[in-house]
Length: 432
Image (tube, rainbow, N blue to C red; front, side):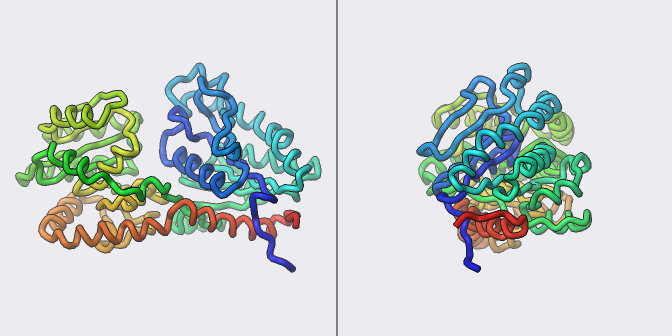
């Protein structure tokens, strides 16, 4: 028996996800994962379709990357009534997605692919697509095409696991997840997913402009310049981070804590607790600032303990922040993977992670790994790094080396090998 590889000549990819490349469609790490994964597949030559709940005012279909990447913006007629983002009107969008996407994939992608003697590879993300995947598998089976397809369903998080028919899903698809931590979590449910990690885009490895970093740091006259980016969710341990800043302030240290939070209601509690602990919180509201405008705004707000960045932070600025801050707090209590932490490492920054799904982080080698929810653990480690600058320099060097193992090109190579195995397990007929 000859080894049969997945190649652009014999396969077409379909990614199913609520989140996607549009700003409207991004609420967390999933949107970035789908964006980068689809681009990485297209760069390797694969025809790649992404079906996601997109911006209602952008084209319904958009072709990119030399016509290899095709974006299908779904449920736009519903999204026009819900301007606040992908998850506003969630149930209405979910019903529409489940009812229409399986037939679209069958008629517009699967059948043409089979005519060209190509395999359909479906990569579905999160609980929103579970029902869709099951219906799609049934349709393919009914029309005699199931053996021309390989179907993966991926868990990025445990959210809404209770809404999934696991017996049926595991029967029709190969289950995957993003870390060994998540694999072990799902073991307790009687499931055994394949691990395919998240990746880091190549642009995160680009060198940071040292002059801009220096100018960014010159804005602040603080002992500690910190950053935290993420959803306002209790699992992200925002209160722990704020309490650590308050403790540093009580000990006489000057701190500037930049935060780029989500818009979740939990943020109100976090800010209330911060102000109750004596922290001065300043909201920085900007719209597509130039670098000079950004520095000027930060200069005006530098007396604040906490600076809330209420605007879309471009990748260039984010890389400057990741590298230029003394530490980035990605101190989650439960993190399936921890994409922010890995991106910080790719930029050569110092990240404080939790100790669940962040399997790339090695304590005091390439990151600071927090073992507790005690804010004093953050404080003590910050003072330690301040007293031992060589340790911080070593962490920055090793962080970049570790992150390169997770470049999207390498992750996709890993994914392709797993698909080739799954094709055998799903009795999929690989064309020679």
